[in-house]
Every structure is written in C-alpha cells, then in structure tokens.
Amino acid sequence: MPPTPCALCNASRALIIRPKNHQKLCKACFISLFETEIHNTITANSLFSPGERVAIGASGGKDSTVLASVLKTLNERYNYGLKLMLLSIDEGIKGYRDDSLQTVKRNAVQYEMPLEIVGYDELYGWTMDQVVSQIGKKGNCTYCGVFRRQALDRGAARLGIKHVVTGHNADDVAETVMMNLLRGDLPRLARATSIVTASAASEIKRSKPLKYAYEKEIVLYAHHKGLDYFTTECIYSPEAFRGSARTLIKSLERVRPSAILDVVRSGEDMARLVPAEVSGGHRGGKDVIVNEGEAEGDGGCGSANGRASGGEMADMEKQLLENDGARDNETEITVNGHKHDPNCNKSNRMPKKLRKQQMGKCARCGYLSSQDICKACMLLEGLNKNRPKTQIQVSVEEEDSSPTLTRRMEGLTVIPGHQT
Amino acid sequence: MDTKADDEGNLPIVVEFTGGLELLFSNQRKHQIALPSTDENGRSANLAFLVRYLCQSLMTGRRKDMFVTDGTVRPGILVLVNDADWELEGEDQYELKRNDNILFVSTLHGG
Image (cartoon, rainbow over all chains, first blue to last red; front, side, top):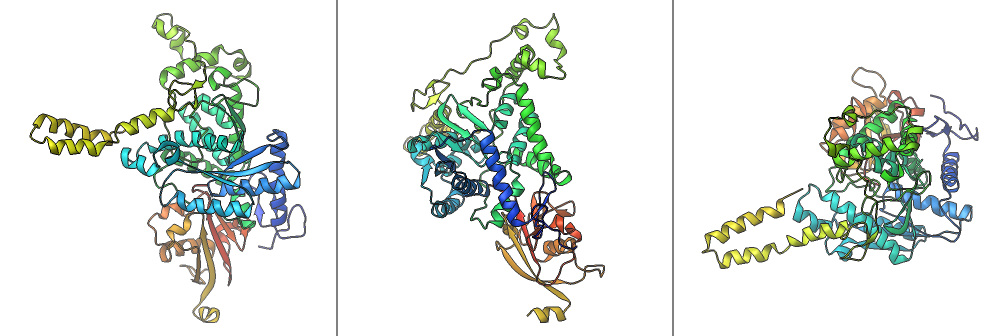
C-alpha cells in the first residue's frame, strides 16, 4: 500500500487512523490534536480554576501517565495556572503495586510534580495482602474499592487539595454505562457518566478530563510520545464482570469504532432521565452527589458488589414514573402491570419515601459519612473481629481436654474463610 | 546475519509486545525473528501468517486467547507496522518486508 499523507498537514505520512472519525493523521498532528481536544473538554466543562491545586490520581499505568503528561503540557501551553501533584495509593499488594509505584516515582521526576503516596496499612492497619489472606480472593475488591475512595480523599486532604483528577477514559465510561445498564443501577449510571462528581461526603471534587478520549488513542499517545508507563493486572482481581463488558466494548469498536463514544453519549442521555432523588444529585446541574464509598467504577476493578436490592429498584421505578422531568424526556415509559393492580399488596403500592442522604460524621473515624459508621469502618470491624485467630488456637491447646470447646473452635476456624 | 537469513528464505523482522502481552512471550518485549518468507500455501508471508507463526513458535504463555480470538488478533490489541496502525496497511493482509518492525500493544490491562 502506498503511504497515506496526513489529512491535516498533507506533508507527513499518516500513522494514526482516529477511531471516532477515521481521520488519518501523522504523528505530530495526532499529538497536537489529541492535546487540543483534552483542552477543549477542560474549557467546555470549566474543570479548573486559575491557581487551583490539583492532585492527579496516579497508578503508573497508561491512563494516569498520559493524563499527567497532557495536563503538564496544557497547563504550560494555555497558562491554566494549576499546581499539579501526583497522588498514589499503595494498597499493599506485593508484586503489583510496589512495581507500579516505581513508575510513579519516575514520573514525579520526569514531570517535576510532587508525589504523595497513601498506604492502606497506615490508614486502615491492613494491607490488601493481609485482607486477602484473611477473607480469600473472592470479594476482596469490595474492600479495596471502599478503602481506595477514602484513601484518595484522605491523601488529597493531607495535601490540602480539593480537586482530584483521574484517568478514566471513554472506554472505561462506556464499560461502566454497559455494566450499570445490565445491573439496572440507575444511580450509578447517572454518576458514572458525569465528568465532574462533587460529593456531599467530602469537600473534594473528582473529574475525568480524559472522559472522551479513546483508550486506543491514549495508548498511541503514550507510544508516540515515548511515555514511561507500567502495565500490570491486579493479582487479586479476576475482573469477571467488567471483563465481559470490556470484551463487548472492544468488539463493538472493532466493528464500528465510533460505538464507544456513542455509548458514552447514550449513557449521558439516559443519565438525564434519572431523577435527582435517585442519582443523589441536583438535576440539570453539572455536579452530581456521590454516595460515600461508592466510586464511579474505580478504574478497572472487578467489584460487582453494592448493587441496589430489588426493593430499591421498585422505589426507583416509582420515582421515575412520578418525576415530571423524566416523563417529559422519555419517549416511552413502561411500568410493570402489577403496579397498577388494585388487588396488589398494599405495601407495594405505598409510595415509599426515598431515603435522602444525610451527611454526618462516622462515629469511629470521624470521616464524613451518610451512616453512623462509614463503610470502611464497617469492613474493618469485620476484619478485626477475625484477627485474633492464633489466640483462639492457643486456648484450644490449653484446654484440649474439653471436647465441647474443641468443637466450638472447629466451628470458629470456618469463619475466617466465610465469604459474603 | 540478515544475509544468511535471506539465503534460507527467511525474513528478518523485529516483533515487540507491550501492554501486558510480553507475559505471553517469555516476558520479553523485543524479539528478533526470522520469519519464513512464504506461508503454508506458498504465498508471501503476511501479518495473518505472522500471527499464526507467533502462536506456534514464539508463544510461551498458555493464554493464547489473550492474543488471538476468532482467528485474528483480539479486539483491544493494537498492531503497529513500522509505527503505523495496521488499519492503514491492509490489516492482516499486509505483506511483511525485511527489517519490518511489528508492535503488538494490548490496551486490555490495568492502567
């Protein structure tokens, strides 16, 4: 095949074909256009204010590395006046995070940004390695996700920073839209599509400047700019559910590359139909309130937990029906017939009030929470209860003449392996 | 060395794996290989043949499905031919030349 010239400069050979519009670009034009588009996303959504101190959630992976590089470039080119920093979480997973943190440390030098690392061990007294040795590999993503969200906030708070940016890209958002559609999780569908998520649970706002950037272009940007990033898969995350959503998105992209942005836009449109009472945010506004401890997908982890129960779903449907705004926007609303059945059980028909978020402080750790005890503390309580396992075994040896106690201890040893 | 490879009817090329794919290929990013210049049917070696060849001769990991599905490179893996997207080069029908650099980048792994 003869070399194709770049569609923009017409001079250099095209090396990149853009997924969203098939435009063929040379390396220099691609890099410049990619950066300009991120700049446009930033300005169109007024993500930053001059002089703002912003922490980049950095894992050492491709997305956060590209985000750090692009933000540094744009901050200098367009005089955003931002003070950028890198904020990393050390979950305490040997052979995984310790390697990628080395990459973050190099990035801090390369991009001349201060780096703060917040460890689960110092925050919670547990590394993920210890959590997994206690509860097993199944369900550990729940712990990691809840811990991470607080850890990022606490790390930002330690730095006195009120804005954390993350490297979520268009593919991530499209996957999350699919997952939440399949789960029927309307609140998260609404939150995950939002480019900015402010939270009543903390003063720290989150945003995703790469929300409209294709993963493919992020990887190509990193490649053509020769960026230093680290690839790894969390050794504890089988990524079962996100994995299938991911496969679906990538297969769609192969057939029709524009599909990814189409899914993102559809997700945004659907999110507009979700009433504020359900999404937890104020309608029409850009900001969406996020429940404490519930991240918008947490960057590729396999957690499929915390979905709404059936009862909540019924409430939501009712709320949807009652919401005038939603009705105006909907093309068609179908409600299960039994809802209008007069013989239906009364309790089903009683319009239950959706619980409103009441933000208070966790009684244990003082962290802002909608419940008396925050999620992290609840999880920690469960972990700590099972910790003195060795002590119990000692007492078995001491009193092994008592068959009743031995039997009781046999019963107890099952508990650490028990999973929810 | 290049000449010798030519005498044997092989194409000297460089194949690189990144983004997690190196785990399937001896945990090594860069491989200098001598690819037979014709495929099983005597046609000039193209990228489809290279992918089959890599699965048979170079792959050490057991998760072949992480590299190939439905007979072609798995969606989510980028293929660059001398730095150009293979979509610009005829995808798996691209015929390999001496000293080509073929890069496989997975976008599927943690970031």
